[in-house]
Image (cartoon, helix red, strand yellow):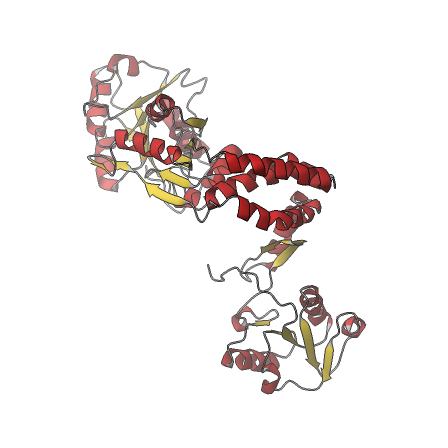
Length: 466
C-alpha cells in the first residue's frame, strides 16, 4: 500500500485551507461535515466559500499564505492553482509534521481525500492512491447503491447497545458471533423498518440466551478454487470472512488469504511431495480441536475439497466427534485450468467423456487402469502427475495411445503467472525438463488439447510455451 487507510477525528480541531475557489469550497464542505474549525487563507474569496462562511463558522483571512499560518493546525489543504504557493504550503506543513493535501498534486501530498460513502456513523472510503480519482468515484457509486441509508441507523443502534453487550458477553470471540447474528438477522430487519422498540426487545432476548450458552464451534470446508480469487463463490467468501481461524494448504493463493478477517489466526498445513508440514491425521484432529474450543474454522483447500482434496477424510473425523460443519464446493483445478487454457474438457468432435485421475497414489505408485485411459474420444485430467510424467506418457503409449497424442501441462492455472505447455506424449517429458516446469501443475491428455492455440483467450504475463 502506498497509503495507509485510517479515519481521523477532526471535530473541534483547527484545520487550514489555502485557496478559496470552487475546488477549495468542496474540500471546506467536507471538512465542515466532520466538525472541524476551519481557517481559510486566500487573496480572493469565491462565492461558494463566502456562502458557507456563516453555516460553517469559517475564519477568513484575506492575504497571501505565510509559513506561520500552519502553526497549530491539525490538518492542512492547499487548493490554489499556483504551484509555487502549493509547494510552500506542503514544505511548511512537512516541517511541522502536519498532514497536508495539495489538490491535484499527489507528489506534494502526505494524505489524500478518498471518495466517501456516508452512512453516519458508518463511513466507507475508497481511494486509488491518486492514480485515478474518477475510478474511485465510480466504485463509490457502486457501493452507494449497495448500502441503503438505513445502515446508518443500524450502526447507531449497535452503538447504543455496545456497552451492554460487552458487559454481558465477556469473551470477544463470542461477542463477535453475537453481533454477526444480530446485524444480519431479524434484529437488523426490524431496525431497517424503523421498528427499534421491537428490535431492542429481540436483541435483549438473544443477549440473555447468549449469556447462558457458550460458543459452539464449527468447521467450514471451503473449496478455494484453482487460484484466481474471483473464482470463489459468494458463500465461500462470506464464511471465510466470519471465521476465527483459517487452516490452509499450499495451493491457496495469497489473494484468497487476503479476503479473510484481518484478526483471524492463519495456520499453514500445506503438503508437498515427501514434505508434509502436518500429516493428514493431524490436520483432522487440528480442525476438531479448534472447533471444540468454540472457534469457527475455515478449512481452505485449493480447487474443490471433494476432488482429490481429502475433504471426505476430514469431515469423517468431525462427524465422529459431533462437530457441526459445512462443505462449500469450489471450482476444481480441472475445470478452472482447462477453461483458462482454452482447452474444453469435452467437445463433440474430440471427447465425449472426461476422466479425473491422480498421478500420485497412497503407495507412491501410479497404478491406474491404463487400457481404459488409452481409449479414444475422451479427455484425461491428471492431478499431481508432474513427478511421474515420464511414466504416465510411457504407460499411455504402451496401452494404445499414439506417440503423437496431444498433451498439455498448465502451470499456476487461472493466475497471472499461468503457463501452458503443449506437446505430445512422446516429447512432453523432455519439454517439461527444458522449460523448467514446476508445481502446481495440471496435465490434460486428449485431442481437445489441439484447440488450445485457437481458443487461448486468457492472456497472461507468462509466455505460452509449445
